Length: 103
Image 1: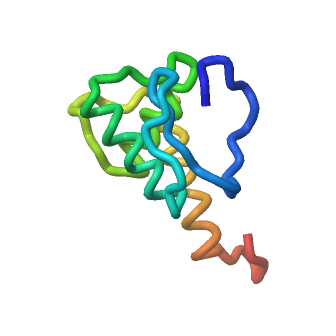
Image 2: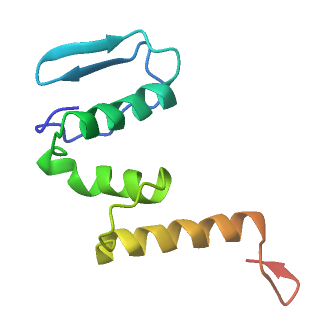
Image 3: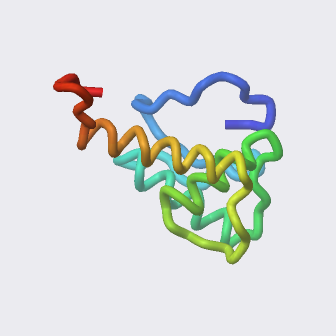
């Protein structure tokens, strides 16, 4: 993923590598989740900023999905996304019945 990336990121890649400032840091990670956690660890340890065009994505993953709080409140757009995802999750696992119909 680079600053010019605009399309969706493939979630089942054939291989996984981490590149920091044009240098290959690690390759052939066995699992996407491990590579992703390592990416966040490296960004923290090396004091790297999130890519400008992906700052909201990285912030959401950091705070909501990984539970790594930095003491700053979520931006309204990210808070709304969090609530919408929780609502969809609740609707999926606990559908509401209205007049005998599942909603």
